[in-house]
Image (cartoon, rainbow, N blue to C red; front, side, top):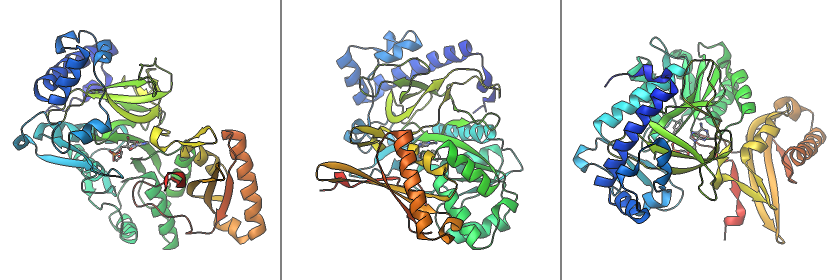
Length: 434
Ligand code: DLL
Protein backbone atom coordinates (compact mmCIF):
# COMPACT_ATOMS: atom_id res chain seq x y z
CA UNK A 1 0.00 0.00 0.00
CA UNK A 2 1.44 3.31 -0.98
CA UNK A 3 1.61 5.91 1.71
CA UNK A 4 -0.22 8.40 -0.57
CA UNK A 5 0.83 11.37 1.47
CA UNK A 6 0.81 13.51 -1.67
CA UNK A 7 -2.97 13.13 -1.67
CA UNK A 8 -3.11 15.56 1.25
CA UNK A 9 -2.28 18.49 -1.00
CA UNK A 10 -3.97 17.49 -4.27
CA UNK A 11 -5.65 20.37 -6.12
CA UNK A 12 -9.35 20.15 -5.31
CA UNK A 13 -10.45 19.24 -8.82
CA UNK A 14 -7.98 16.33 -8.93
CA UNK A 15 -9.09 15.27 -5.46
CA UNK A 16 -12.73 15.35 -6.50
CA UNK A 17 -12.04 13.32 -9.64
CA UNK A 18 -10.41 10.70 -7.40
CA UNK A 19 -13.39 10.82 -5.04
CA UNK A 20 -15.85 10.29 -7.88
CA UNK A 21 -13.98 7.29 -9.22
CA UNK A 22 -13.79 5.76 -5.73
CA UNK A 23 -17.42 6.59 -4.97
CA UNK A 24 -18.55 4.81 -8.11
CA UNK A 25 -16.56 1.72 -7.17
CA UNK A 26 -17.92 1.77 -3.64
CA UNK A 27 -21.52 2.08 -4.79
CA UNK A 28 -21.07 -0.79 -7.24
CA UNK A 29 -19.59 -2.86 -4.47
CA UNK A 30 -22.40 -2.10 -2.04
CA UNK A 31 -25.08 -2.81 -4.63
CA UNK A 32 -23.49 -6.08 -5.67
CA UNK A 33 -22.63 -7.49 -2.26
CA UNK A 34 -24.75 -6.03 0.54
CA UNK A 35 -28.45 -6.92 0.51
CA UNK A 36 -29.35 -3.93 2.61
CA UNK A 37 -27.89 -1.51 0.06
CA UNK A 38 -29.34 -3.28 -2.95
CA UNK A 39 -32.82 -3.19 -1.43
CA UNK A 40 -32.51 0.41 -0.24
CA UNK A 41 -31.27 1.56 -3.66
CA UNK A 42 -33.92 -0.43 -5.52
CA UNK A 43 -36.54 1.17 -3.35
CA UNK A 44 -35.29 4.61 -4.39
CA UNK A 45 -34.90 3.51 -8.01
CA UNK A 46 -31.16 4.24 -7.98
CA UNK A 47 -28.62 2.12 -9.82
CA UNK A 48 -24.84 2.38 -9.49
CA UNK A 49 -24.61 3.80 -13.02
CA UNK A 50 -26.71 6.80 -11.94
CA UNK A 51 -23.74 8.13 -9.98
CA UNK A 52 -22.14 10.34 -12.63
CA UNK A 53 -21.03 13.31 -10.53
CA UNK A 54 -20.11 13.69 -6.86
CA UNK A 55 -23.34 15.59 -6.25
CA UNK A 56 -25.22 12.44 -7.28
CA UNK A 57 -24.28 11.04 -3.88
CA UNK A 58 -27.47 12.61 -2.63
CA UNK A 59 -29.43 10.09 -4.70
CA UNK A 60 -28.11 7.37 -2.41
CA UNK A 61 -29.92 6.08 0.66
CA UNK A 62 -28.81 7.09 4.13
CA UNK A 63 -27.47 4.51 6.56
CA UNK A 64 -28.37 4.90 10.24
CA UNK A 65 -27.30 3.19 13.41
CA UNK A 66 -30.69 1.42 13.44
CA UNK A 67 -29.88 -0.14 10.05
CA UNK A 68 -26.61 -1.45 11.43
CA UNK A 69 -28.39 -2.92 14.44
CA UNK A 70 -30.99 -4.60 12.22
CA UNK A 71 -28.16 -6.30 10.35
CA UNK A 72 -26.31 -7.42 13.47
CA UNK A 73 -23.72 -8.87 13.54
CA UNK A 74 -22.28 -9.31 10.04
CA UNK A 75 -25.16 -8.47 7.68
CA UNK A 76 -23.54 -5.29 6.34
CA UNK A 77 -20.25 -6.95 5.45
CA UNK A 78 -19.30 -6.83 1.81
CA UNK A 79 -16.84 -9.75 1.89
CA UNK A 80 -17.09 -13.35 3.16
CA UNK A 81 -16.14 -13.44 6.83
CA UNK A 82 -12.97 -15.41 6.09
CA UNK A 83 -11.56 -12.24 4.53
CA UNK A 84 -12.25 -10.21 7.66
CA UNK A 85 -9.13 -9.98 9.79
CA UNK A 86 -10.45 -7.64 12.48
CA UNK A 87 -13.74 -6.87 14.18
CA UNK A 88 -14.55 -3.88 16.37
CA UNK A 89 -17.80 -2.91 18.00
CA UNK A 90 -19.12 0.30 19.45
CA UNK A 91 -20.42 -0.07 22.96
CA UNK A 92 -23.98 1.20 22.50
CA UNK A 93 -25.63 2.03 25.78
CA UNK A 94 -28.59 -0.27 25.20
CA UNK A 95 -28.97 -3.57 23.43
CA UNK A 96 -26.63 -4.97 20.84
CA UNK A 97 -23.44 -3.19 19.84
CA UNK A 98 -22.72 -2.00 16.31
CA UNK A 99 -20.26 -4.37 14.67
CA UNK A 100 -17.71 -3.33 12.05
CA UNK A 101 -15.16 -5.42 10.14
CA UNK A 102 -11.88 -4.86 8.30
CA UNK A 103 -10.01 -6.76 5.63
CA UNK A 104 -6.25 -6.87 5.72
CA UNK A 105 -6.18 -3.98 3.29
CA UNK A 106 -8.70 -2.00 5.38
CA UNK A 107 -6.46 -2.36 8.42
CA UNK A 108 -3.57 -1.12 6.34
CA UNK A 109 -5.44 1.89 4.94
CA UNK A 110 -6.58 2.75 8.47
CA UNK A 111 -3.00 2.54 9.77
CA UNK A 112 -1.88 4.76 6.91
CA UNK A 113 -4.60 7.34 7.63
CA UNK A 114 -3.80 7.30 11.33
CA UNK A 115 -0.10 7.73 10.46
CA UNK A 116 -1.08 10.66 8.28
CA UNK A 117 -3.16 12.07 11.13
CA UNK A 118 -0.36 11.80 13.65
CA UNK A 119 1.92 13.43 11.08
CA UNK A 120 -0.53 16.34 10.80
CA UNK A 121 -0.34 16.64 14.59
CA UNK A 122 3.38 17.28 14.14
CA UNK A 123 4.67 13.83 15.10
CA UNK A 124 7.20 11.71 13.27
CA UNK A 125 9.86 9.05 13.71
CA UNK A 126 11.74 9.60 16.95
CA UNK A 127 8.57 10.54 18.78
CA UNK A 128 7.17 8.26 21.46
CA UNK A 129 3.44 7.85 21.91
CA UNK A 130 1.92 6.97 25.25
CA UNK A 131 -1.35 5.45 24.09
CA UNK A 132 -4.00 5.64 26.80
CA UNK A 133 -6.96 5.03 24.51
CA UNK A 134 -8.75 1.83 25.44
CA UNK A 135 -7.60 -1.33 23.65
CA UNK A 136 -10.34 -3.78 22.83
CA UNK A 137 -13.59 -3.54 20.94
CA UNK A 138 -13.25 0.27 21.00
CA UNK A 139 -11.33 1.47 17.94
CA UNK A 140 -9.27 4.07 19.82
CA UNK A 141 -6.45 1.92 21.19
CA UNK A 142 -5.67 -0.27 18.19
CA UNK A 143 -6.37 2.54 15.72
CA UNK A 144 -3.72 4.75 17.30
CA UNK A 145 -1.40 1.81 17.82
CA UNK A 146 -1.22 0.70 14.20
CA UNK A 147 -0.98 4.28 12.93
CA UNK A 148 1.83 5.17 15.30
CA UNK A 149 3.82 2.09 14.30
CA UNK A 150 3.19 2.83 10.63
CA UNK A 151 4.63 6.31 11.13
CA UNK A 152 7.63 4.88 12.96
CA UNK A 153 6.86 6.12 16.48
CA UNK A 154 7.61 4.13 19.62
CA UNK A 155 4.27 3.15 21.14
CA UNK A 156 3.48 2.26 24.72
CA UNK A 157 0.18 0.34 24.53
CA UNK A 158 -0.98 1.47 27.96
CA UNK A 159 -4.76 1.49 27.35
CA UNK A 160 -7.07 3.34 29.75
CA UNK A 161 -7.24 3.22 33.54
CA UNK A 162 -4.55 2.56 36.17
CA UNK A 163 -3.87 6.26 36.31
CA UNK A 164 -0.98 6.03 38.78
CA UNK A 165 0.82 3.62 36.51
CA UNK A 166 0.17 5.92 33.56
CA UNK A 167 1.93 8.69 35.43
CA UNK A 168 4.87 6.50 36.35
CA UNK A 169 5.34 5.53 32.70
CA UNK A 170 4.93 9.12 31.51
CA UNK A 171 7.80 9.97 33.83
CA UNK A 172 10.02 6.98 33.14
CA UNK A 173 9.50 6.34 29.39
CA UNK A 174 9.54 10.05 28.56
CA UNK A 175 7.00 9.95 25.73
CA UNK A 176 6.69 13.07 23.57
CA UNK A 177 3.04 12.42 22.69
CA UNK A 178 -0.07 11.40 24.60
CA UNK A 179 -3.22 9.89 23.11
CA UNK A 180 -6.41 9.67 25.17
CA UNK A 181 -9.75 11.39 25.58
CA UNK A 182 -9.48 15.04 26.63
CA UNK A 183 -11.36 14.31 29.86
CA UNK A 184 -8.93 11.55 30.74
CA UNK A 185 -5.98 13.85 30.01
CA UNK A 186 -7.28 16.17 32.71
CA UNK A 187 -7.74 13.26 35.06
CA UNK A 188 -4.10 12.27 34.48
CA UNK A 189 -2.95 15.88 34.99
CA UNK A 190 -4.81 16.09 38.30
CA UNK A 191 -3.49 12.81 39.68
CA UNK A 192 0.02 13.67 38.56
CA UNK A 193 -0.16 16.88 40.54
CA UNK A 194 -1.35 14.98 43.61
CA UNK A 195 1.64 12.66 43.22
CA UNK A 196 3.95 15.65 42.97
CA UNK A 197 4.72 15.11 39.27
CA UNK A 198 4.70 18.26 37.17
CA UNK A 199 3.75 17.00 33.70
CA UNK A 200 4.79 20.34 32.23
CA UNK A 201 8.38 19.53 33.06
CA UNK A 202 8.30 16.17 31.23
CA UNK A 203 9.34 15.84 27.55
CA UNK A 204 5.67 15.44 26.57
CA UNK A 205 4.88 18.06 23.93
CA UNK A 206 1.80 16.95 21.97
CA UNK A 207 -1.57 15.52 22.89
CA UNK A 208 -3.86 13.92 20.31
CA UNK A 209 -7.27 14.02 21.90
CA UNK A 210 -10.68 12.94 20.68
CA UNK A 211 -13.53 10.44 20.94
CA UNK A 212 -15.70 12.97 22.80
CA UNK A 213 -16.66 16.62 22.40
CA UNK A 214 -14.43 19.25 24.01
CA UNK A 215 -14.44 22.99 23.78
CA UNK A 216 -11.77 25.47 22.75
CA UNK A 217 -11.62 26.61 26.39
CA UNK A 218 -10.94 23.02 27.43
CA UNK A 219 -8.04 22.99 24.97
CA UNK A 220 -6.42 25.97 26.73
CA UNK A 221 -6.98 24.31 30.08
CA UNK A 222 -5.32 21.06 28.93
CA UNK A 223 -2.48 22.82 27.12
CA UNK A 224 -1.59 24.89 30.15
CA UNK A 225 -1.97 22.08 32.69
CA UNK A 226 0.14 19.65 30.67
CA UNK A 227 2.42 22.10 28.89
CA UNK A 228 1.67 20.67 25.44
CA UNK A 229 0.00 21.37 22.09
CA UNK A 230 -3.40 19.69 22.12
CA UNK A 231 -4.95 18.73 18.78
CA UNK A 232 -8.40 17.39 18.12
CA UNK A 233 -8.83 14.07 16.31
CA UNK A 234 -12.19 12.76 15.13
CA UNK A 235 -13.50 9.46 13.95
CA UNK A 236 -16.15 6.85 14.50
CA UNK A 237 -16.14 3.09 14.30
CA UNK A 238 -18.89 2.92 11.68
CA UNK A 239 -16.77 4.96 9.29
CA UNK A 240 -13.37 3.50 10.29
CA UNK A 241 -12.29 4.57 13.78
CA UNK A 242 -9.99 7.42 14.79
CA UNK A 243 -8.27 9.19 11.90
CA UNK A 244 -11.24 10.24 9.76
CA UNK A 245 -10.29 13.86 10.45
CA UNK A 246 -7.72 15.77 12.49
CA UNK A 247 -6.56 19.30 13.13
CA UNK A 248 -3.17 20.21 11.78
CA UNK A 249 -0.88 21.51 14.48
CA UNK A 250 -0.03 24.47 12.20
CA UNK A 251 -3.49 26.05 12.39
CA UNK A 252 -5.40 24.14 15.08
CA UNK A 253 -8.49 25.50 13.45
CA UNK A 254 -10.87 22.91 12.08
CA UNK A 255 -10.19 19.24 11.36
CA UNK A 256 -9.06 18.16 7.89
CA UNK A 257 -11.32 15.35 6.69
CA UNK A 258 -9.27 12.83 4.68
CA UNK A 259 -11.39 13.30 1.60
CA UNK A 260 -9.49 10.89 -0.61
CA UNK A 261 -10.95 8.11 1.60
CA UNK A 262 -14.23 9.64 2.81
CA UNK A 263 -16.92 11.71 1.17
CA UNK A 264 -18.28 14.12 3.75
CA UNK A 265 -21.58 15.97 3.60
CA UNK A 266 -23.33 18.23 6.05
CA UNK A 267 -27.11 17.83 6.06
CA UNK A 268 -30.10 19.32 7.82
CA UNK A 269 -30.62 16.96 10.79
CA UNK A 270 -34.40 17.08 10.40
CA UNK A 271 -34.96 16.93 6.64
CA UNK A 272 -31.69 15.22 5.61
CA UNK A 273 -31.28 17.85 2.85
CA UNK A 274 -27.65 18.64 1.99
CA UNK A 275 -26.51 22.04 3.28
CA UNK A 276 -24.02 24.41 1.64
CA UNK A 277 -20.52 24.89 3.02
CA UNK A 278 -20.58 27.12 6.09
CA UNK A 279 -24.00 25.98 7.34
CA UNK A 280 -24.25 24.05 10.59
CA UNK A 281 -25.70 20.59 10.32
CA UNK A 282 -25.19 16.86 10.79
CA UNK A 283 -22.11 15.19 9.33
CA UNK A 284 -22.76 12.35 6.88
CA UNK A 285 -19.93 10.13 5.65
CA UNK A 286 -19.52 7.73 2.75
CA UNK A 287 -16.45 5.50 2.75
CA UNK A 288 -14.55 5.55 -0.55
CA UNK A 289 -11.97 2.79 -0.13
CA UNK A 290 -13.28 0.33 2.44
CA UNK A 291 -13.65 -3.33 1.53
CA UNK A 292 -15.19 -5.29 4.41
CA UNK A 293 -17.58 -2.68 5.67
CA UNK A 294 -18.25 -0.01 3.05
CA UNK A 295 -20.80 2.51 4.23
CA UNK A 296 -23.04 4.87 2.24
CA UNK A 297 -24.13 8.22 3.68
CA UNK A 298 -23.84 7.33 7.34
CA UNK A 299 -25.84 9.67 9.58
CA UNK A 300 -23.40 10.43 12.39
CA UNK A 301 -25.67 12.72 14.44
CA UNK A 302 -22.55 14.80 15.03
CA UNK A 303 -23.08 18.52 14.56
CA UNK A 304 -20.46 20.54 12.71
CA UNK A 305 -19.81 22.95 9.83
CA UNK A 306 -17.66 22.34 6.73
CA UNK A 307 -15.12 24.91 5.56
CA UNK A 308 -13.35 24.50 2.19
CA UNK A 309 -11.07 27.56 2.67
CA UNK A 310 -7.38 26.81 2.05
CA UNK A 311 -5.41 26.10 5.21
CA UNK A 312 -2.04 27.58 6.04
CA UNK A 313 -0.62 24.06 6.35
CA UNK A 314 -1.09 23.55 2.60
CA UNK A 315 -3.51 20.65 2.89
CA UNK A 316 -6.42 20.98 0.50
CA UNK A 317 -8.85 18.73 2.34
CA UNK A 318 -11.99 20.38 3.66
CA UNK A 319 -12.05 21.23 7.36
CA UNK A 320 -14.86 20.43 9.76
CA UNK A 321 -15.40 22.63 12.80
CA UNK A 322 -14.80 20.76 16.05
CA UNK A 323 -17.87 18.67 16.85
CA UNK A 324 -19.76 20.50 19.55
CA UNK A 325 -22.00 17.56 20.32
CA UNK A 326 -24.27 14.87 19.01
CA UNK A 327 -27.94 15.41 18.41
CA UNK A 328 -28.45 12.56 20.94
CA UNK A 329 -26.53 14.46 23.63
CA UNK A 330 -28.41 17.67 23.13
CA UNK A 331 -30.47 18.50 26.16
CA UNK A 332 -33.72 20.31 25.48
CA UNK A 333 -34.41 22.35 28.56
CA UNK A 334 -37.67 24.26 28.62
CA UNK A 335 -37.52 24.38 24.86
CA UNK A 336 -33.92 25.60 24.66
CA UNK A 337 -31.35 23.35 22.96
CA UNK A 338 -28.27 22.99 25.13
CA UNK A 339 -25.11 21.07 24.31
CA UNK A 340 -22.94 20.18 27.30
CA UNK A 341 -19.99 21.73 25.43
CA UNK A 342 -21.70 25.15 25.58
CA UNK A 343 -21.94 24.86 29.34
CA UNK A 344 -18.32 23.70 29.36
CA UNK A 345 -17.24 26.89 27.57
CA UNK A 346 -18.85 29.04 30.26
CA UNK A 347 -17.38 26.97 33.09
CA UNK A 348 -13.88 26.96 31.62
CA UNK A 349 -13.96 30.75 31.35
CA UNK A 350 -14.43 30.97 35.10
CA UNK A 351 -10.91 30.89 36.41
CA UNK A 352 -11.76 29.78 39.93
CA UNK A 353 -13.30 26.49 38.76
CA UNK A 354 -11.58 23.16 38.11
CA UNK A 355 -12.24 21.45 34.74
CA UNK A 356 -14.50 18.69 36.11
CA UNK A 357 -18.23 18.97 35.60
CA UNK A 358 -21.43 17.06 34.94
CA UNK A 359 -24.89 18.29 34.06
CA UNK A 360 -28.07 16.76 35.46
CA UNK A 361 -31.56 17.40 34.17
CA UNK A 362 -34.72 16.65 36.12
CA UNK A 363 -38.40 17.18 35.53
CA UNK A 364 -40.23 18.42 38.59
CA UNK A 365 -43.84 19.58 38.61
CA UNK A 366 -43.77 19.43 34.81
CA UNK A 367 -40.84 21.81 34.70
CA UNK A 368 -37.33 21.04 33.51
CA UNK A 369 -34.58 21.76 35.98
CA UNK A 370 -30.92 21.83 35.00
CA UNK A 371 -28.27 21.36 37.64
CA UNK A 372 -24.64 22.00 36.74
CA UNK A 373 -22.20 20.27 39.09
CA UNK A 374 -18.71 21.66 38.85
CA UNK A 375 -15.68 21.54 41.11
CA UNK A 376 -13.96 24.52 42.67
CA UNK A 377 -10.25 25.06 42.18
CA UNK A 378 -8.16 24.57 45.35
CA UNK A 379 -7.64 28.36 45.86
CA UNK A 380 -11.40 28.93 45.71
CA UNK A 381 -12.04 26.08 48.13
CA UNK A 382 -9.67 27.71 50.58
CA UNK A 383 -11.89 30.78 50.62
CA UNK A 384 -14.81 28.88 52.15
CA UNK A 385 -18.49 28.26 51.43
CA UNK A 386 -19.49 31.85 51.01
CA UNK A 387 -17.05 32.19 48.10
CA UNK A 388 -18.29 28.96 46.49
CA UNK A 389 -21.84 30.26 46.55
CA UNK A 390 -20.80 33.56 45.08
CA UNK A 391 -19.13 31.79 42.16
CA UNK A 392 -22.16 29.50 41.74
CA UNK A 393 -24.41 32.54 41.38
CA UNK A 394 -22.06 34.17 38.90
CA UNK A 395 -21.86 31.03 36.75
CA UNK A 396 -25.65 30.60 36.78
CA UNK A 397 -25.90 34.18 35.61
CA UNK A 398 -23.35 33.62 32.83
CA UNK A 399 -25.12 30.46 31.65
CA UNK A 400 -28.38 32.38 31.43
CA UNK A 401 -26.58 35.17 29.58
CA UNK A 402 -24.68 33.06 27.05
CA UNK A 403 -26.99 30.09 26.55
CA UNK A 404 -30.34 31.55 27.50
CA UNK A 405 -31.36 28.87 29.95
CA UNK A 406 -31.78 29.03 33.73
CA UNK A 407 -29.51 26.66 35.61
CA UNK A 408 -28.75 25.87 39.17
CA UNK A 409 -25.06 25.61 39.77
CA UNK A 410 -23.44 23.57 42.54
CA UNK A 411 -19.79 24.36 43.12
CA UNK A 412 -18.38 21.21 44.68
CA UNK A 413 -15.23 20.02 46.41
CA UNK A 414 -12.35 18.18 44.78
CA UNK A 415 -13.32 14.66 43.73
CA UNK A 416 -17.08 15.13 43.96
CA UNK A 417 -17.61 14.98 40.20
CA UNK A 418 -16.94 11.50 38.77
CA UNK A 419 -13.59 11.25 36.94
CA UNK A 420 -13.44 9.91 33.40
CA UNK A 421 -11.31 6.96 32.25
CA UNK A 422 -12.44 7.22 28.65
CA UNK A 423 -15.45 9.01 27.23
CA UNK A 424 -16.80 11.32 29.92
CA UNK A 425 -20.51 11.31 30.72
CA UNK A 426 -21.34 15.02 30.56
CA UNK A 427 -25.12 14.96 30.75
CA UNK A 428 -27.34 12.79 32.93
CA UNK A 429 -30.95 13.18 31.91
CA UNK A 430 -33.13 11.93 34.75
CA UNK A 431 -36.23 12.75 32.70
CA UNK A 432 -35.58 9.60 30.69
CA UNK A 433 -35.69 7.42 33.81
CA UNK A 434 -38.94 5.76 34.56
O1 DLL B 1 -14.60 7.48 19.38
C1 DLL B 1 -13.18 6.83 17.54
C2 DLL B 1 -12.09 7.69 18.08
C3 DLL B 1 -11.15 7.13 18.92
C4 DLL B 1 -11.97 9.01 17.70
C5 DLL B 1 -10.11 7.91 19.42
C6 DLL B 1 -10.93 9.78 18.16
C7 DLL B 1 -9.99 9.24 19.03
P1 DLL B 1 -16.78 5.62 18.50
O2 DLL B 1 -16.58 5.01 19.82
O3 DLL B 1 -17.51 4.86 17.46
O4 DLL B 1 -15.41 5.98 17.84
O5 DLL B 1 -17.51 7.00 18.76
C8 DLL B 1 -17.73 7.90 17.71
O6 DLL B 1 -17.56 9.80 19.21
O7 DLL B 1 -19.72 9.95 16.38
C9 DLL B 1 -18.65 11.47 17.97
O8 DLL B 1 -19.94 11.63 18.53
C10 DLL B 1 -17.67 11.21 19.07
N1 DLL B 1 -16.36 11.77 18.73
C11 DLL B 1 -15.28 11.13 18.23
N2 DLL B 1 -14.25 11.99 18.08
C12 DLL B 1 -14.72 13.22 18.48
C13 DLL B 1 -14.14 14.52 18.56
C14 DLL B 1 -14.45 6.84 18.37
N3 DLL B 1 -12.88 14.77 18.23
C15 DLL B 1 -18.39 9.16 18.24
N4 DLL B 1 -14.95 15.53 19.00
C16 DLL B 1 -18.58 10.19 17.15
C17 DLL B 1 -16.23 15.31 19.34
C18 DLL B 1 -16.06 13.06 18.88
N5 DLL B 1 -16.79 14.10 19.31
